[in-house]
Length: 208
Image (cartoon, rainbow, N blue to C red):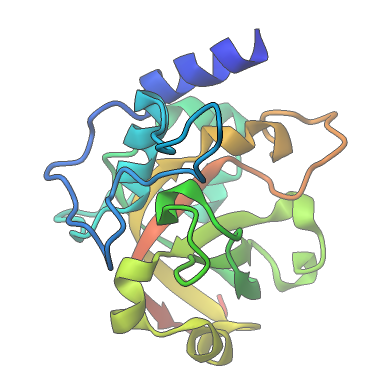
């Protein structure tokens, strides 16, 4: 039943929402791929997972920004159904951590040589060590030539207030890890399954 619900959620929250199919990146198709197994020797993903990866791998910047999408609004559980992956957003928050993304993700074709940059953002600097208050924003390999590699980004923004611009994305795979959607969960390391992913620009800003 849990697997069925995840697939249905992917279909509802993802769908073919990208305006134009992203281009391959260093030989990795935008739909991604998993590691080949005996059961799946090609590593081909299900259609919902391919569609989620196509959103993660968008390579165009938003043409408009929805000002109603703020970090404060995103952190409210009651707002979870109000956002859409078609929305461009600019959020301001305190950067708690900059770290490597999950290794060998399917959006990066399960490869070890390309990976996202994972950034934990909070509403208040005092929350920097409280993982249940994190919103996750990510710089994909497609934007690292423009925005910097892991070491460069970490040096530039960790421990600072930053404005992130990019695409909204609901990472349904991590609903069970989000306080907003699974408040009594035992593996909570984020506040919400909503992300800005990919980030297409960022700027260090003064503390509010």
